[in-house]
Each structure stands twice: as structure tokens, then as C-alpha cells.
Amino acid sequence: MNDGLIPNRYAKALYKVANERGDTAQVYAQMNLLNAAYEVQAGLKKAVNNPFLPLADKLQLLCTAAGADGNGSTARFMELVVKNNRVDFMRDIALAFMRQYRENNGIARVEIVTATELGDNEINAIIDVVKNQLKGKTIELSKRVDPSLIGGFMVDVDSRVLDASVKNQLEKLRLKLLS
Image (spheres, rainbow, N blue to C red):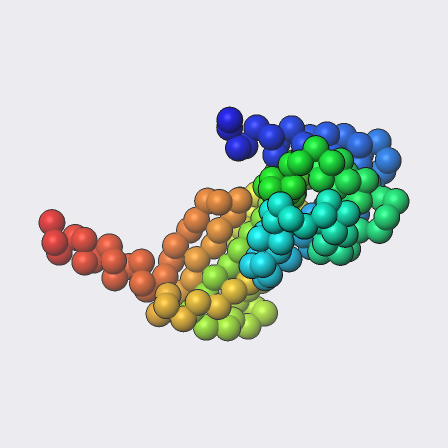
């Protein structure tokens, strides 16, 4: 079975319910928290996929990771996911929901990766160039430092990458010299 089909269907259903209840922004924030919990805590996936862990504990674990209360759209949705034994798709569902929310609300995810920490002026200059290309979309910005770039920067806008790093330039030069 296509692994993307199940998460996308569940994400659409969650978006529809959250939209009807008027709490899509809250669900989006909770899905962001859940995704961050999966990134930071490697044991979360193992725990929720453990067949010996009771369903109530899996539900509690997911709700805690997402910061969801017992009566909100997210908690009720997670209860459905756990009951239908689709908990192994929960992170993919969260990612699909976040993607759908960003598309429906005109939000572009922008990540700036630099070799060293940049000042606000440099970051703002990069953001201004990106905003001109996005034409009215709201930017959801994340920054990260990666010393392996040697110098320069990379900008990732919704999975489209502009690589202006020294590392990339050196790799291009190496490939040119080899051919």
C-alpha cells in the first residue's frame, strides 16, 4: 500500500474537522510540536509502535508530545488514529497536515543554513530577496548553522534549494576538473 495515501487521507480529514471547528491554527501548532518531538526524541517512534504498550498509553504519549488537551480536535483525532491502529503513520500524518495548512494559508517554509552565525542585517537581506520571489506569501523562517559549508549560505524554500556555499562551489570545481 502507498504509505503517502494513508497519511494524506487522515491529514485531509483532520484539516476538514479542524476547519469546521475553527481551530486549524491550534492544530497546526500542535502538529509542529509533535513533529519536533519525533525529531528530538528518537524513542518516541519506538514507543508508539510498541505492540505491548496499551493503546491508552500510546494516546497519552502522543497527546503529551503534541501538547494537546483531552477535548480538542488534535486529541480526538489522535484517539481515532490509535483506535484504527494507524499510530505508526502519526508523524507522516502530522507532516501532511502541516503541508496542507501551509498551502491553504499561503505560508512558505524557508530555512537559511549558514557556515557561521549571521547578523540580523544579513538575514533580513536574504529574507527580502526571498519575499520578492514569493509574492505575498507569509514566511515561516528557520535558521541553522552548518560549519561544513565553509562559507556562504543555503536557502531552502519549500524544498527548492539555492546553494551559495563555498562547499558547493568547490564541489562544482572538482567535478569540472575531473571531466
